[in-house]
Length: 235
Length: 331
Image (cartoon, rainbow over all chains, first blue to last red; front, side, top):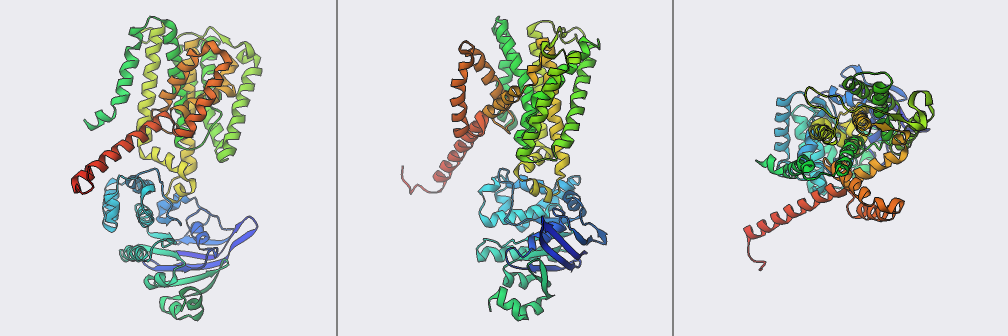
């Protein structure tokens, strides 16, 4: 469904990604593991059109999308839930969700159904619908960011470190919801440092270091891999 | 009912505005308030692109002047019928606005502000120097009053007052619908974070351009009304000072609020007029007032009022929650 071949991205002279090749099949939940600065977010920004690759191709459903504008890609079905739960703090919870439907705003009925569904996934958002997004707790903000990404009814969603700065209990809750979203048929690409929790829900994974993919494999393979265990799981 | 209650303040405001000419015979007061209404329309444009979309355009007086000069030249030199000239003036301003926007919006943040500041100054220079067309420093004299629409004529101060009030009310209604629509919310989203707006699927370049073009349209509208109301225009209306006056009105009233431009413009224009006897010394009063306002009410008078209302509603809610649950806390 999503295929990167030999993608390189530069920030000025600095090469942030070198020859990244990865694939995500329809219905999969794939995790990207890596430390800070490894290039996870850059991969996401490249897929969602915020960065342009200097080399290589990005394909989505067989169509080359490298260098397309971000707004068009959202319409095509690529949802992005950016790092650090970026919200519109001065808008209410409901308005944040409404902004998420911008790309598909024509279809009112589907939008209403999706809103219902997001409220089902996160009942707290329904309770706080009228409150300012800036007044929510960290976990609630993350839930809102996830909910907003879903509002455009994406075929594939990129979750960029959804567990960052959250209490373990909340992290588990967020991961459960991500798994649920995946089970409902949405393809998920998840970037994480929290390898233990992420691998538990993932089908496959890639490990990224210094802008390169160093290890890839299925959930079991990565769980058993000594290097991965040492570096990310701590066992 | 709920909606009516929410609109209570603006409706009272409108009623006062409608009745105001009946309570005063002083033509000068009417003149000053009419002028404030015209400026308020222009400030709405600045408020849209600067306050809501977060792109501080400092070429605003330039577009105001383009609207004014377009109307003036078309009616005085080309003898075009008034309302046709009025319409053409809006088209001309909007087209120039689109062209400038296409280039200017490639820059961001302070670079955008600096770029538009330069554009504004260039417009001033063109008007000032292009003697053959604009009359240069002498300006344009003898622009006609708005032509009669059917039986309604606009040759008195009061009739002009009502005509301009109608345009102002239409502007406010338009802004209300625009800013509450999803398109209007995208402007706030862009102000918040352009990148985030992109990731949720907003074509930020297109939306910024539309917002910029609407703002120049409103500047042109105000300029055209100004030209036929004052009936004399000079290059000073395109000068940078004018832009900063507009900006001051917007900030005092509340940048990025629906009623900020009206409140700020009326207040400052009336204050300026009543301090006229102090001449340029009135800036000694204005300066500190502005500084205090920005420190204590960064979102202006309207923003401050909204905060106060929200706090009050919150306290009320807290109180009812306290009473509803337990009386353990005493008093």
